[in-house]
Structure formats: C-alpha cells, structure tokens
Image (cartoon, rainbow, N blue to C red):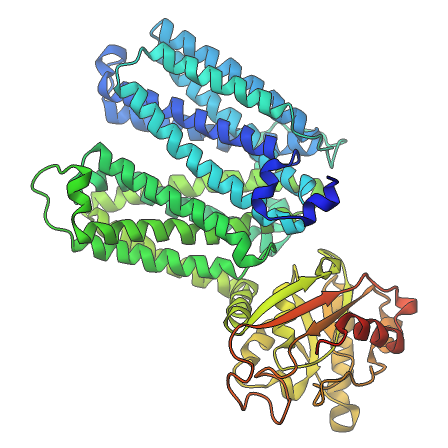
Length: 634
C-alpha cells in the first residue's frame, strides 16, 4: 500500500501497522517502560533496604533519585534540540538506544559491586538519554505523518507513554519488593534496551532540516536562544506554557496518590496501584478519543474543553475525598470498592485523566504543526526545559502547602482553582483557543460535519479564502475546519448579529459596507485586508456579498479582483454543502426564527479545491469552481 493510500485509508490505530509510525511508537514505549522500571525498582530498594546501601534517610534518597533523573532536562535539552535539527533523527534515535544499552551495563555493574554511586549515575544517564530522545520523538512525527494523522499519532504516543510509565512503575516495584536479586532487575532493563534498539532500526530516515547548524554547547545561552525561537510564534509559546502547566498539574496529582491511597482512602499498595491504573487509563482514553472528536484535525477547541474537565473533576475529587469515611485501619481493595464514595473518587480520577488527554494532545500537535521546520526540534527542547521547570515549581509549591498545614484533598482543590485561573489567563491572551471551542461546540451541537479537500488551506503564508454564503454561521464553520485563524470580511450588519458577534469580534473579522451606505468603511476594510495579507494571514471573503435567500449562488462581486490587484496571493475556493434550510439560513423566511427546522445533527460538509493563481482568480472563474464544488447539495 502506498503512503498516500495508507494516509487516507484509516484512523489512528492503522498507524500501528505503518513503518512510518510503529517502530517509533515501540521505541518510545520501551524507553518509557525501562526508565520507570529501573527508577522505581531503585527507589523501592533504597527505601526498604537503605541500610545495605547508605546511611542516608530513605526519603532523602527517594527525592535525590527523582532529582537526578530530571536534572539532565535542564542542562542538555538545548543541546539535544540542536542535534535533532542538525542530524538525521532516525540515526539519533538508534544512537540514544545504544546509549541506553550502555547505561544498563553500568546499572548491572552497580548492583554487582554494590555501589550506590554507580546506580545513581545510571539513573542520571537514563535521564540524559530521555533528554536526548525527547526532541527526536516529537520533531520526527510531522516529518513522517500528514497533518490529518498528527493528532492520532500524538494521541497514541501520549497514551502509550502513560501506559508504559504505569507498567514500568508497577514492574519495578513488584520486582524490587519480591526479593528478586537486584542484578536480574538490571538484566531485565538491559533486555528491554536491546529490544528498543532493534525497534529503532526500523524507523525510516528523517533528513535534518538544518544540516549546517553549528552546535552551541553552552547550555545557558542555548536554552535562552531556544526559548526565543519558541516565542517567535505567540500561539506556539503559549501552547508550550499550557503543556508545561499540564505536567505541573498532572505530576502534582500523581505524586500524592501513594499518600492519598494510604491516608485518605485507607488502603494499601493495591489501592495505590488501582488509583494509578485508573488515572493512566483515563489519559489513554482521552488521548485516543481526541482523533475522533477532532475528526483527524488539530482541533484547538478540545483544549478549553480539557481545561474545564481538569478543573471540575479536580474540585470534585477534593469534595469526594471529604465525603469518605474516616480511616481506622488498612482495607483491602475489595473492601474499598464496596464503598460508593470510593467509586466517585475513581470516576473523578478517570475523568481527570481523560480530560487531560483532551488538553495535552492538541497542544503537542499544534506546537509541531506551527513550529518552523528548521527549528522544530529546538523549540521542542525548549518545551522540555520549561516542562521540567514547571514540574519542579509544582513539587516545591506542594511541599510548601503541606508545610502550611493543607491536607491532600485541599491541595487538590487549590490546584483545580489555579487551573481555572491559568486557563482564563491563557485564553485571554490567545482567544483562538476559546473561539475554536465555541465553534466546536456549535458545530457538534447542531451538525455532523464532513470535510473534503480542506487540506488545501495553507498552514503558513498569506492566502485568500472564497466561499459561497448560505447562513449566518458560515464563518464559524470555516473557522472550525481551518488549521489556523481566518480573518473574515463580512457585511457590517452580520458582524453585529447578536449571539455570534462575540466570535466575529474576537477573530478580528473585518466589517465592510457597500459604498452607497458607508464609503469610508468600505475603503478601511480593503486597507485592513491588504495589511492582513502582507502580514501572512488568511483572509476569508464571501464574494456574493450577501447570504442567499433562494439557495442559489449570487454572482461573485469584483471585490476579489480589487484585493488581488493590490496583493496577488493564492486563492483557495471552498464550498459549503447542506446548510440551506438550517436554522441559521434564510429558507422560508428570516434566519434563526424556526428552531430545529432541520433537527439536530444535520449533515453538512465543507469541500475545498487546489489554490488558484491570482491571474486566474477572476470572479467568474471562482464562481464556476465553487458551484462545481457545491454540486446539487445546497
């Protein structure tokens, strides 16, 4: 099967049968599993057998181990991003897996000679290996996957990572607690590393976007430089901040689960395992649902939906915890599951994870899609650095709140309230997230939307979008299918339409009036269109100049020609199908006067055609193309 056929032939799970994705997924899965297998086994060993290894207190050792693993992300992420932009990423993946094999040999030696220093060094090196692999993992996806596959690919990577973390953590704890000779734990890690290397050998080539890049080995200056690259695109940088906040929020909840299971639920190790498993399953389900909910499109509307769920179910987890019966003794898992209040806790954890998946997957896909290709790996490296910084801040904040006397449920409540505040702050800075959410809700509340040919809308650079005008929500629907914001030129009366005028204002729509009504407004509108195109933005117009009242196309007006004479940019023809007769159309009288005229979930579609060169984009030619795209389905 050819790549083109394969890309169009199925959903995200089909990627697992593709050489473009499956080897990378398996390499990443085994790496995350091995990291947590070794890390948790070591923590359990030094916690319960600390006297055999050192005189340090177990809790100090556990925190030292966690710190050593995350430390390389601060010092080597900048270098790893440069390497991933300069060299073939498939080759780098194989080299990092060879490094992992060497690290596990160091771990075996550490257990054989009973050296805690060697074991902690191996843990630090595993953190280094993860640091080197991180930019490779995320920057390679846009090279091997199409835009319509990017959400599904990221969803599976995120779901797979969390499942690998859970299984690795459980396996490490079980092996260390079962009295197995520690050398065999390291041998198991060695075998997993070898399997990961064998998987990496099948990753297809991923040519470097910046082969002439001169690597700067100064981590401080390069870190600041990479953050500067990320800040070049405001939406990308704020997406990185959103991703980092998620890791702070998620890590804060995960870190408390062992103590929560014991102190609040009154359970043992089985209860902690259950809590971890439920949260992980939620992340996996939410991540995998992203592709279905976004229709294989980078749907930013899911991000506010995710943040709402993270707040609501974080708060409810705190409230559900307060409703639990007081702990008098340690209960087995079966006894805990006999309490209805525990089921509410588990439901909250599952939904927290699920809405976390809605939140994180589109943000990762957006960063990959909108990052400059020759700087993508370095921008992802900046993301990893900021992620690590936020997680450290979260851990320190949690420690401070515990020192101030807060209980675990109260910590959850504070975190959920902070999440709401962060969401409001980010969506205030980038209205695109909130507006896409409103558009997503509107589309899914009233319609079942199909898309064909919308991939012709460019991901970067100026272009003019032209489309037939059937209803008052046409701009909202086109906004929902476009990979980036569109600035619509629209009649000033429609611009002021109640209910949806909020969306038009915040998408920076350009109101226009006929010359006979307001010549000054018309001239200002054309000037604003020119500025937008020269800034590399997408501009959308409805050349009919009015919403149809008979279902047919009106003649395209000459405004298109005037725009292209001043700024000759590619023109993308689109056609709306199925909206005639909807609540927002003018069939049989004024729009929005007959609720549920077509019923709920009516079928509609947006169809696109390849770009038309400016010289060929006459009103007559564009009208012919749009009419052909629309066909007989009004």
